[in-house]
Length: 389
Image (cartoon, rainbow, N blue to C red; front, side, top):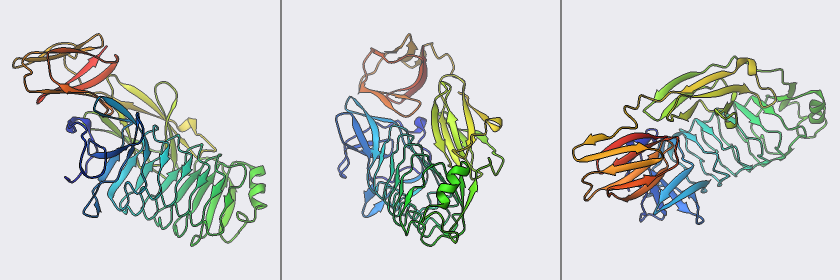
């Protein structure tokens, strides 16, 4: 097994197709391994070889992977998938609804993570032993499992959703620098006696006076040696954002400041909720604006909202044939046309999210795909970026 890439999984550099392999996983696509769990779904699998998990660097997981004519939805991350790996950042797509026990445990360089909006539970030991500093749990999460953040000594700020009902044993055990807890849960979550073992002097921010009184009357949350209860009055720091293009296919937003951020797409729908230091937006065919709103979950500061723009690089003559010897590749009216000498070649077609849409031996043919998208077409060693109208 080759060592996996340490850089961001940029589409332009990842033109290998998925393949079956002999290491216990069903699919390898763009340096990530997957197990097939249904006719249409896969889970992210570990990358162990000789006792070492070889994932490293910044990982942006895709929503779909392609293999043998099927586009599989990425819906889960297997237990211990990134355990003891060298990953530094993780961005999980909203297609994922389940993250297994200890999925990121003891990945000692993991500093930031964006969780999917459909997550309903934080699994046992999910991020234990990492160096994440801020985490926001999306609405819909009802429980935090045993040891989920145990020994996260860099963890300072956690945002808990309205839906949270239970915090398990040592969930935040020995998070020695945890000092800010924003809880939007109107009813105090049922909290195990050891949930915050080894912690002290945590400032708990709550939405209003009525909620604060409920926490004051709760046996666990009224522990004045551990918690001090406050009413949230807005952002404690001023949000900042820097933006830079990473390769041809991603715009990176530098966020942080121990805040959470809601990111809305051009359609107005919530795309992500993140407290990660960096968040990556895909670059499409046209300039796309995303609304970035700082939040404490209880309070969205729309007066300080920011606009991020995913600006595509120039695509020259995107509707014209591009000669390359005897081979031309062009896109028009939802169809990709390949003409010329394709003997012995294969065709691979990706979208800008890294999803493989087409994989076949190359012939002179017409390939119909959804329009109003950018595709990267590889025929043999010839690569073209095309916009289908």
